[in-house]
Length: 200
Image (cartoon, rainbow, N blue to C red; front, side):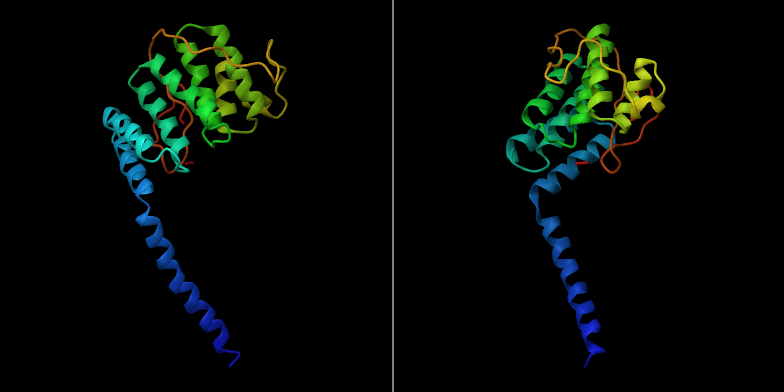
């Protein structure tokens, strides 16, 4: 009888796995999100942009909403629509302050300011990335743009004129050329790092 208990436990676990997998495949928000991410992987940013906007209309309360908002900004960025991308990344920060995409959105804001020729604002935001998100891929990219060694991430210098309660520079309405942010593993089509390579 004792020998059968492990076998019964194994069978119960094995039977519960397909049920969990099928529950995930039945989630319409996950299915739509994954479908739109395919457009990103194929570099069809116009289609992906439309898809993520639709996702946000249909599934605004989904746990994936912050990631979809981030990808709206990312698609705009890759289409070189910097003012719109800036607004989208600020939306990630204001609407989803606990999002896993917060570091990436903040970094992108800093990179956009640099592309718009607003070096002071860019530096403030990139310093914020290093200070608030140390030991991350985003902090490493920010340090490279600040002209400092990534080894400095563990002991970043005090940001120039930025205190913890100070807000980021406001979004601007100018435009300029392209770059890429840090992205995460399974949702990012990996590209060479021109400006930077970039969870749902």
